Length: 438
Ligand SMILES: NC(=O)C1=CN([C@@H]2O[C@H](COP(=O)(O)OP(=O)(O)OC[C@H]3O[C@@H](n4cnc5c(N)ncnc54)[C@H](OP(=O)(O)O)[C@@H]3O)[C@@H](O)[C@H]2O)C=CC1
Ligand SMILES: O=C([O-])CC(=O)C(=O)O
Image (cartoon, rainbow, N blue to C red; front, side, top):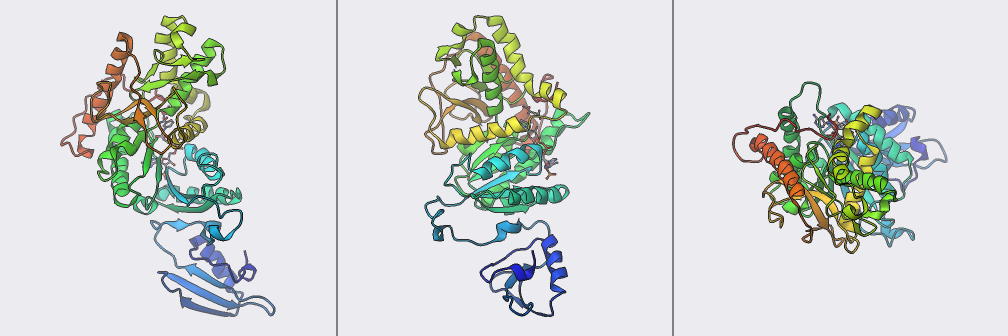
């Protein structure tokens, strides 16, 4: 991009430091440049240069070097535009702000392109992506933003990158919280709960301070149920109902295994609930699930397979995949995040439901209050959900639910210091593992 190529209507209000140094090299080639402060834009300059005869004079606003914790619009996404002024875009909805943390990670690398393409929020919904990273991932975030630029998505109108959650969460309507520290060799689960808990406590506070009051939060970073609880407790001004822990991947995995066993395509499996924690104690509910509208137990007449092989396959699917791939599920996780969002913004098909890790207070099943637990939900498509009442329980299901509930209550005790409940006491059951740990 040469300065002389900019049209007079081109207004740039932010430049990233790499562009700034590029521009200053270019500007050195021009002899007549005037620099003056830009009204109402702190730390910005207007640069007017006479270039060569017959070329337009282009006013260019250039931002001074700023600390990295400022949100920076990125490259082409710093252009200003008026959607209402263009024939093709004037009927579009109002821009929505979507924050994604861990934006330079594997899951985000799939998810961001789905969000930008229109396949999640629809073909008339322009989106602004606000990417949260850290000092160490800042360059990688720039790489992600460059790929978004090069994809020319018509609906993607703004992209900004920052390492400050208070900047990134400003006015966001969706917060997809993916970034979390992976458990390393020799790290105790209590240690992981503490380290990641701190991240989610800080992000909860930031959401509370600056996000839209109706923001919907989907926590993906593990251990996602307890991280979601921590985030929610640190955001008391946002309804507790707006916080979700992602268990949709588990639901999708369970549907696939049932379809495989029954010899039907997976779209024939419905009413699939994952109860409890996104861990190896999760309970894929084959008692209430249906295949072609019939109870699973009428189609798959193999109780032992359902209780043992099926259940364990779903619980440990993440770990098996890590062994094959050498890294955890990223593409299918991003698909399941899309499914989770769509389930909240489109009406649930009649008679069906979906699973999400949500706040238990007031639940109709007798599950302990004040934890985040995966349960069956229905939505009218307004972003909200109701818990499904017409589910049945048997002794097996109740016993399994009690186990995953005990695990989540123990996780909660480990993070008492992060949810305003005094001193933490960590007595996790030994079998507590993420789906990716085996
Ligand atoms: N709920 C579910 O169904 C699933 C959940 N997961 C979980 O999702 C999370 C992300 O997975 P994936 O994208 O594959 O992982 P990656 O390692 O590819 O990316 C994760 C991102 O998290 C950030 N991160 C790492 N350490 C820290 C830290 N100490 N503080 C803050 N952020 C950190 C990093 O960003 P930066 O450098 O910017 O900090 C990194 O870009 C993991 O916790 C994983 O266990 C995965 C699959 C399924
Ligand atoms: O354990 C992990 O990081 C991966 C995970 O959650 C899953 O595959 O379900």
